Length: 328
Length: 235
Image 1 (cartoon, each protein chain N blue to C red):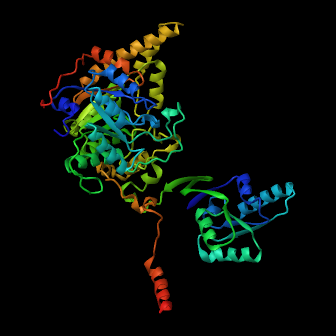
Image 2 (tube, helix red, strand yellow):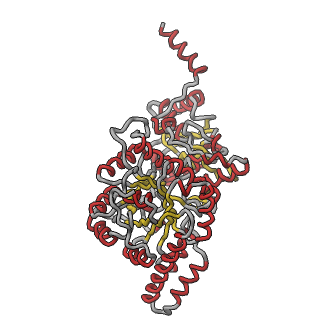
Image 3 (cartoon, rainbow over the protein chains, first blue to last red):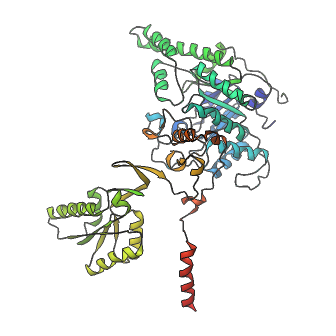
């Protein structure tokens, strides 16, 4: 065992893994985190605790992850390369480890111009870091774990148990580089991969076939990203504005019909769209589950975490397997 | 070249409105080419200040000059002499930041104010448009990336890019910014060297860049002569 984390044990035991997301609050109030944790307890094997997602300041991932852990859920701390240099990242990972965190997802991080994709002011005038990139970060964490070494070459007093994750945008532009990017992440030491949200299942299947030919699906554990669509507007926005996300017309059409079926009743329209979105999410989970090499799903219900249990229940993924510490 | 952009006249004016004899000093090299600090721009800034001061009945005199390069002492010497001869009280430099620094170092008692904002190292890609192409990071890796610099041209300076934010060849920060990695991939495809991108570039040593502190370059063949001369004098 590299870390002994629940996620590692689930994946190593060959179970189809489920991860979900808990976005920390824009405050220092732990109650907000605990509330979400209680709501989601038992629904997934591990929970990503986002790190200043979309370049918006929120409670730190390490701190929120420790709170979540205290509630008996398993967190995945996230580290973006935007906000910290290699000293700060390594120190935070050690701090997280001291608090009992065993999983870490390494990501580049949205540029600081993002500010929740323009919905908030954010900090566009911030100085970014990007001292290392996400692939280099994976390799640094592997060195901290396997060789008990800091990136600069100094020894750590003991190895850091970590289960190392990375993100993958299988359908991002330029598409031919995406399998190569994944290979670099796997070569660097990524134990698990969470993908960008998949709506274009056929396109995703094709990319999975390419990386399976490269043998990557056997060297890492790939969890397909599912972003719960909540409305026609959201689906259209993701299709037009979120890099690496393509929504097939068929799904947009379905959502449009759900909206239209409610007539002028706006409340009913949003209820029907949400129901359709839940249905779509369940279908997407079932479809990606059939793709060779997919070892789990990463379900994101942004700002609507309460939808996750229902979706996973309908997809037949609940209850989650009981794992004794010894298993695997 | 170093690309710069003229500061607004009102800002320049705010720097010098308390002085009587002001020299607007252009630079014949980079800022001339980037159309903000050559002879023509010296005239524009000088005329603007004259009109503005005249309008308020201020008794001031604006002088004009443009030297070959503000970043070399032998050229700056010409300006230094003029400052002395003409009793100049303040200088507005239309050279890049390097020019302002060297002038400040060589002109002990006369204040030097920046008349331009120094932007980046770039190339003219079409008339009137410059693009940043080099970050001066001190350890060139262009041999690995098809001659296109990810440090200067990727918003995140990623060495193993592209990130997931690229879309239709554009960067996530805006549609008028090309994704450097999309350019690199296209270029390496056409060179038949795309497979080289499968090798991971390790975390970089940034000490060769500004992160290692202010930098100094000594050209030994030239510098040694001076060292020996100094030593000879000491003996």
